[in-house]
Image (cartoon, rainbow, N blue to C red; front, side):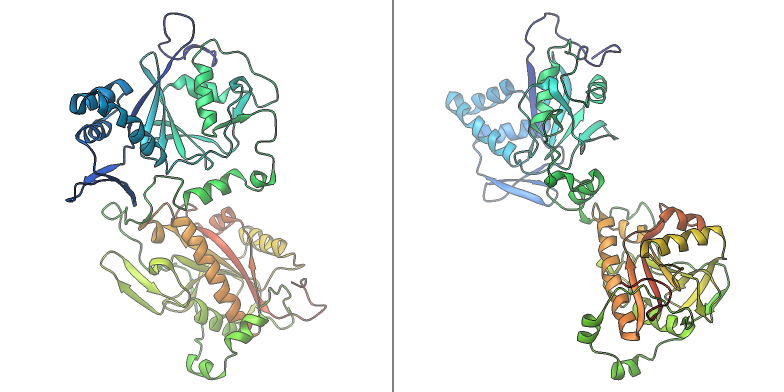
Length: 488
């Protein structure tokens, strides 16, 4: 496609007018591995996913070798089989290709006049796209879930609703997609006769949807914001071909972060430690704690939280009980579970009113069981306190907002694709432990659903992309009816 008109001609258009044939070249997924086991059967793998193709005839084995080596057209595939097995062998090709397509093993490149335009790379076994459209390509628009981004090989079009990624080889096709009208009614007619076929191919995979109708307006899709559906699809297997799980991808690239965060330079406050043996004998039962747990947002300003209570709470819920080495990185041990013993979560108490601790933003050192001053009261801390107060619908700031951050590198140094999802799982189980400890101690605890990560970055000076807030938990003395705050 050349010139300023995005509906113009695909690069190197055919010289003669009339119907344009969009050709197809096939090859195995670039990440596919073919293994022939001693029994003679052929197996194919992409990452952890694999299947057996059975015992292949010499002709079909040659076809697999050709598809693994590079792109091939249907005529080349037929010639290979014919050279090994004659005319009868050619009848076996369609069945093999259908099986490879259905299993998500085969990439397909569409070409116009001998030039590649786009490639559909499978992300998993083929399933019918939920937003497939087979109507007039002149009435299409981009799906609101589709994302066009750059990667190492060029521009890629992806959607969490598609089981393929579309690699765009012609820059003019990018302009075409960006220029598709979003309102009802047909767009301008394209000059290039290949454009409708390419748009139809993208629509069949769910990247394009009709501008008229309610393809994405029902609750099934309206309930999802694009980034949330993307997050769901990319942190589970089945809809992407990215490395996944504990791959230790950064080993040799970067040093792993230590299990305990390096201390801050500010003054520190030593905290009292809990008597665990006494608590084993006198603490409330698990059933009582679980049944009585509530989200409490009433704090008693006349009898605020004390340093002893804060110390016991943090000791019981977040201290580091030990450090280990698995040969690759340091591991921790704290009172809540953490995948791979990463323990990437940190606590920054934003103290408004605690008897025995001056107001300010502190970091909890889980190794030494102390508070390290990070920032004195000021506009940045006021912004954080106002955010937690407004989120909890309290009339005054909570006694303490426990800002929970993640040192992302502790998890992402080891895990591929699922690292951030794992962080959020850790926040959830940590909330439950803090709720249980607060209930057992007779304190008011309340987990919040969101917070201001930029405000924390400003207040602490910690780089947002390296360590950032991922949760907030309010803590205070239990208020009585009529005290500040609102009931849960």
